[in-house]
Image (cartoon, rainbow, N blue to C red; front, side):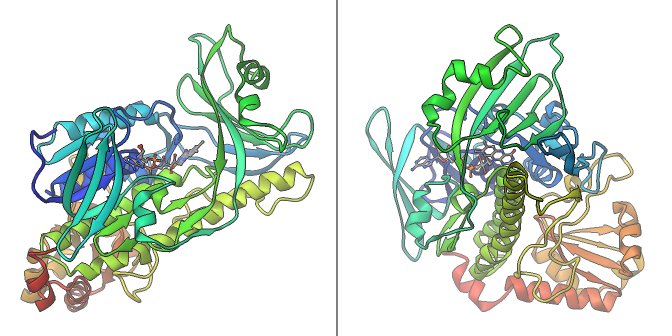
Length: 507
Ligand SMILES: Cc1cc2nc3c(=O)[nH]c(=O)nc-3n(C[C@H](O)[C@H](O)[C@H](O)COP(=O)(O)OP(=O)(O)OC[C@H]3O[C@@H](n4cnc5c(N)ncnc54)[C@H](O)[C@@H]3O)c2cc1C
């Protein structure tokens, strides 16, 4: 932690859960100063998220810690959804090999370990001022900056932080969201489940199939999740009459898990009852105030996508804040944050609700709407925004390749735009396009060196522009088209417009 808080930080991040920590990690990679505030003196002890997809790991890569953390992540087995007679009605083939993101498709991780490492890493950065053990009580803004007021929970002293922007990563009950205003749209996914985390003793063999068994019979509906080498999570749907206290009672918990373990073979790390919700905020931004992660959306954790969605939020937001603060884009760029992220998140909420409904249907002896092989690689597009009306793959997540020296593409490109083009297309690109690439700090790469030639050829393209959050801005077939695409990007960002000249200093 730096010794002193800057007079006006670039960004104040309210909430140091996994999303706030990730945002801070991405912002410092953009060269911004960050003030991070959280009630908790330490990271979370009881993990909620366990699953990360390959896109989430790519965000962790952008924070510079994937090479260090990924080897300890656990690679899960395929998922099966069984009925009361143990017929598999739906399944996904969670694939274990390296996929098109240059990481494995799915991982299980240990949230407390991740948060502890992120706090440590951010603590080493002179660009971060962290205030832990403080309760944020108010957030206000004027034309030039935003102000965060907080109270130290031990000392009772008041703290005031000023920043150009404030991002509320402050979870489901977000103060920043309430300050922004607007309702939470209810997408009807409320359910209660008890979540039991087990640490299995060395030498004890335990099932490692990720599955849900749905029944209305005495055995009860449950989901069995291998979350680590020796960790297993078992989730039971709460019955209407059951209270949290009765569900979490130690004797009851051992009864619930007796099919797999006993006090002689495992330790209960925790048993907690959660109400899962499916909610989407109507407003993600008001001027200098924004929200990300659970503050903006919540979903039943049936697809393991709540945190993954939060990580996508901050990947989308971090570079946009940096561009606005550096005067490389108009502040209106921030309007594309909600328009791009909200529809994408809505799709994941609907998928999560669909799985929850299928479990309900099977338990009720009905045919579920989800059946057979599920496509684990489906990647929804972001909503309308920077890419305008451009057809896919614009708005879709770009691939990540390995370079000839075995390193990953993103490590070469860094947190900037990438222009990846065939040599002949690059050579013929116009001076105006080159000037724009320089102005926005784009990394320009020959497609052959970037391992992108087959991807471009398959699309009849000679060049692709990839955004700093690794979504495709657009394709071009020729040098002329690349000039046009670059000009569209310059206009969409507002780069070099008089509006920026007058607002950059204040942004
Ligand atoms: C049982 C369960 C399993 C899940 N499994 C998965 C999964 O496998 N994969 C996945 O992607 N997602 C999963 N999720 C969802 C995931 O856990 C959440 O989406 C994620 O934790 C949200 O992170 P966040 O940082 O946005 O919010 P939080 O983790 O809620 O963090 C918010 C932070 O803000 C702080 N804070 C709040 N208000 C204030 C204030 N006024 N002042 C100071 N600090 C404040 C809090 O102390 C907290 O540290 C699961 C959720 C549950 C409940």
